[in-house]
Amino acid sequence: MSIRVIVADDQEIARTGLVMILDAQPGIEVVGEAADGRRAVELARRLRPDVCLFDIRMPGLDGIEATRSLAGPNVADPLAVVVITTFDLDDYVYAALRAGARGFLLKNAGAAMLSQAIHAAANGDALIAPSVTARLLGAFANAGPSSPPVHPIETLTDREEQILATVARGRTNNEIADELHISLSTVKSHLASLMAKLGARNRVEIAMWAYETNRVKN
Image (cartoon, rainbow, N blue to C red; front, side):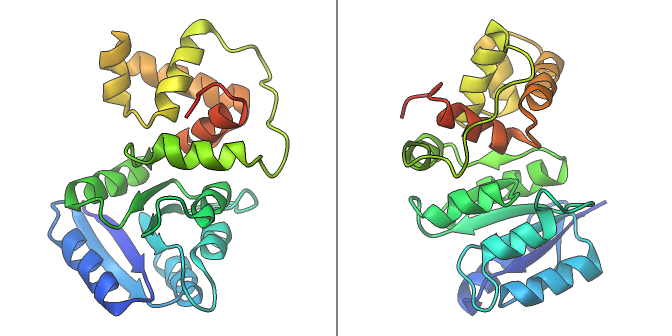
């Protein structure tokens, strides 16, 4: 069964290009597109796609507010949102992650990375473009979080600290397993434990917490 995606970008050329790239990927089907955030939210609520791909800067309702409307902390049945942007040091990206985005990419990421992000989001995971993870999250963490970082409900184990650092560097589950010489199921188990201890909804929030608590230096 194909992953159903809606695409929102106010630039017609960019939106058309994204739709063409996604429709050419096996297992992905674009079921709707929008030129602004308000229309994107309406489409998403009506179509209930597997993944929403939103540009950050859109008229009417920007990508941050659209993300918060569909995936924010107070949304009972959140949708998966991936944010895409031209700017690798855009403070809107950090705000979008806080609003509930399940990952972000740059528009020059390429078809393979875009497809990987869509699949990750559809599978309940999150993908942060590795090429910009440390620089982007580190920059905004250094600027100070919007609120004090949460305290874990239990102390992290040494292994959890190791996995926390790899997640913050944008590593995938398979890469973490290879790097730490552990099984994929063990990685997933540790990630679940980290999310429970930190009250995080996904690996994006785990990564942000790592930077906010200075566990990873950029």
